[in-house]
Image (cartoon, rainbow over all chains, first blue to last red; front, side, top):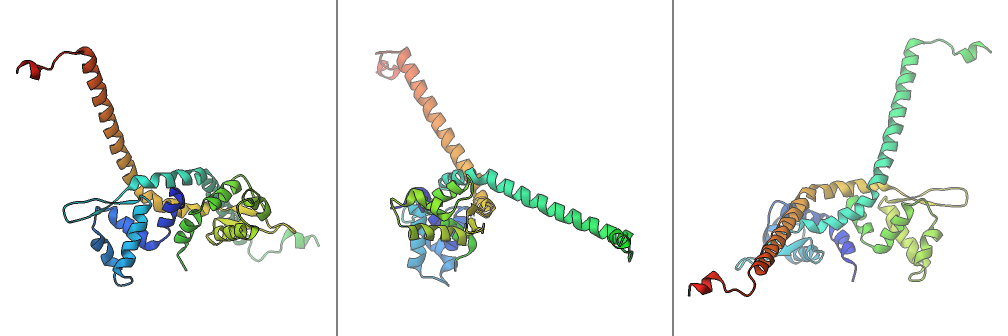
Length: 131
Length: 131
């Protein structure tokens, strides 16, 4: 039995399940409503299985409302996924800053090159003159 | 073939692979170094397979340094995982705020109860007096 954090990551590793969470972020829905957009590409049991994976990971909860059993999102279950990710935030921000610096230096060098090409068209370089 | 975001979530859904990323966050390492802490519980091919899953998801990169092929972390690959999560941040923060409010109200009610018990020990309630 995998740990809960692994179960959450695993539950999120599927576009159908992520689409279901996006739907539930707008408000609760019963399984048949959740299933509707997917029934052209998969069976109702397949959809139900996806909902069960989300439930088991604690991301979705089924309540009881008379005959209905609406599903709702448990967004607080994403907090430990966020906490795990947080440890790497500084690293990826540094990495993106380095990429940004690099792209800026490349752009600046190109602009400098274009400027010098414009100012001195068709002249030979000093290097060649001194030969 | 799953989409890249699904591949990333899937790669993160394993404690061994998350431990490898934590090791690589400290600096690059070759596969045998990465494998060392896990060889009591799994074979080298099993460890190599985990590294390949991380590579395929873009979270780890193998470079070439003479005979060595050190692995390094690509933290910027976590950015789209973070972007996906970000959509739900407001929802889970609201949810945690509500929980916090609820706990505060319970604690306050308990404190109030204890205070009134202390101030009026062993006396009957007004309700009983009026009977």
